[in-house]
Image (cartoon, rainbow over all chains, first blue to last red; front, side, top):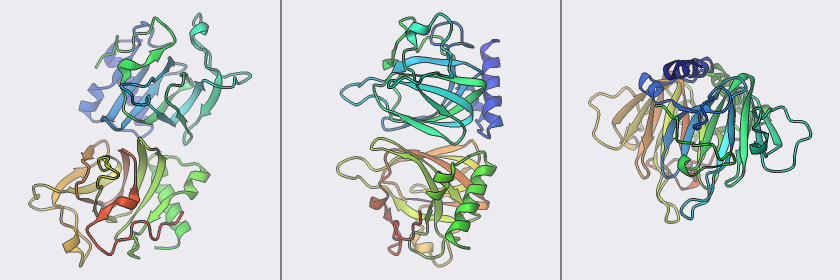
Length: 178
Length: 178
């Protein structure tokens, strides 16, 4: 995978290809989330947060080819409904899975040996210009196609520390390098 | 200026140039806001709303060369703080003016004869990759450079009907064509 700087550089290049520019300072703040699992290329993602206030949040999510964000949900926090997210594909293709009616044959491939912790099978395929809004408290996971993907995320406030992952091994805030 | 379809087509082309794709259906929903003033090329803007929920909102704002969004503020509504907005420039240059210390010599040019209703003079110049967050209840207006501009707007819920414009002639929801 290379070191942290290489991952950030690769992320910047993918964003740049899609016309999404980050300042030098912003590039340093790219978040590399390996979820404490130690195999970023398979499970994890790269994120850049434009803004996260107590009212709204906007991020870019960058996925390398077939890289997968592990299944999780956003629970209610302090009596407020959980995070609601709109995913808009900017580049590449993203296979998104949410709780609900199972799609017969899905395009995404749960990481080998991890099938038990990827339970959502209702498939939404997003290509550039397509979007989907995930309700609060709804299990979801997503994977890039062989090409990789960029997803713009518009949402209510992000409180990542409260995210509930299906895989008990995940530690969302571990292995984040800024 | 041409007719509504021509304005939408021109808007789509500018977005496309910046790598921002809208589906055919979305293109129809581009909002042409001339604010009821009848001179869109000078005062007004084009908007596309990705999502507007009771928690968050995301839009693209497209400005033709020197096109100007009239001065306004977002007041508290039903006891909730007014809309808070993060403007991120995607393409071109935008001259943004907010209440506060006056900048000595500003780049933006209030529309001729309208100087009295463009009062905010604290200048923020945004080029691609730069952003600024406008607090609630704060007068602001903005103008594109000679090139035009695209601004991504991340915000709390949009309730455009409550916006308070400095110019009493503005009717925000008049002249909107979807």
